[in-house]
Length: 271
Image 1 (cartoon, rainbow, N blue to C red):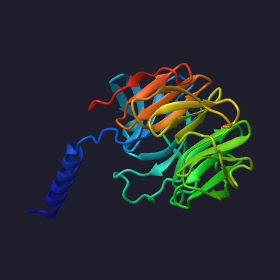
Image 2 (cartoon, one colour):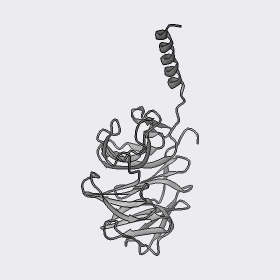
Image 3 (cartoon, one colour):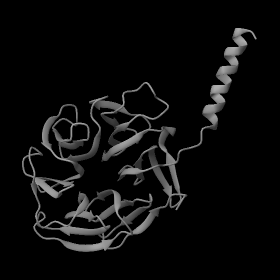
């Protein structure tokens, strides 16, 4: 067989394999947010960034398969994320570092720490940005949008929230709070066993069983609200009263009253 023909057949075979590769779906959801430009809900997931289009519809943005571990919306069409590249980019560094999009995920640029940091939690707070880096096991703080970082406390953090000049972190030991930009934390002694926390009208979180709790005094006292049907894997506040929560089955729940009542916003095809 002529060499040129053999090479052509290999290329065609590789192309056919790529075309036959099944869509991996959404996978585990790690983050949720709303684009203020158009009110669209986005899911940051194991197999890409998805825009929710209906109760049964979600579109992978730009067709890009990329693992988003940390995710936050910072402005119209402007998101920050972190995680790992997809299988289509095998030569890329294992960790994305901090990346930013200004076009709702159509394109991304690297801000910092490419190949190094894997930020599992990202929390904007005015001009500051806070993060938890799973590689070093430390909280970090940035005053320039994530270009440069200050190393903070060593904590195993699941989620971060900034409220009333305090940085809150859900950890394996319970909710903790820092008064010095994450340099050190102390326990919030009366807090429920929260897995996620957000700064809504009040400090609001979801516990290990899916129950919503709110505090109007910085965590000194808490009152229960409504419940999710199970534990949350992603949680976000949108304005003062709207909460979004994603449960382990990938269902997105939406509350407009601070967590009293939740309605299903999106349900994956397999549920």
